[in-house]
Image 1 (tube, rainbow, N blue to C red):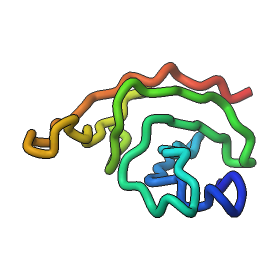
Image 2 (cartoon, helix red, strand yellow):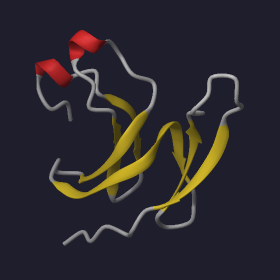
Image 3 (tube, one colour):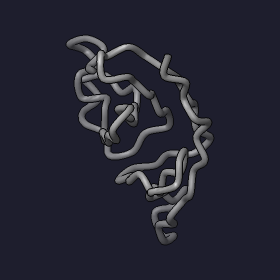
Image 4 (tube, helix red, strand yellow):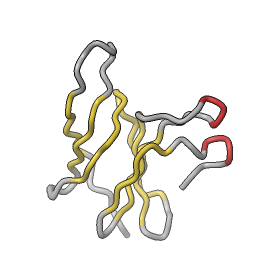
Length: 98
């Protein structure tokens, strides 16, 4: 799923269910070092085709799919390093698979 050699560290987390592969993408380039959080979610089918793309208004990481369709739980990066992390519940529009 890596975009190219410059951004091959950009996917910070990947999840999958029976229909789709979900990838959190930071957009960081290799020279910037690895990222732990991302602000974009890409959804692919099992053939590797992009199904949908979702820019996020915050940086998240360590996500998990729930049993509820379109629901992802993620750890949100605090804006201030002194603040605590929060768990964010994201509602992703159901991708169409076909």
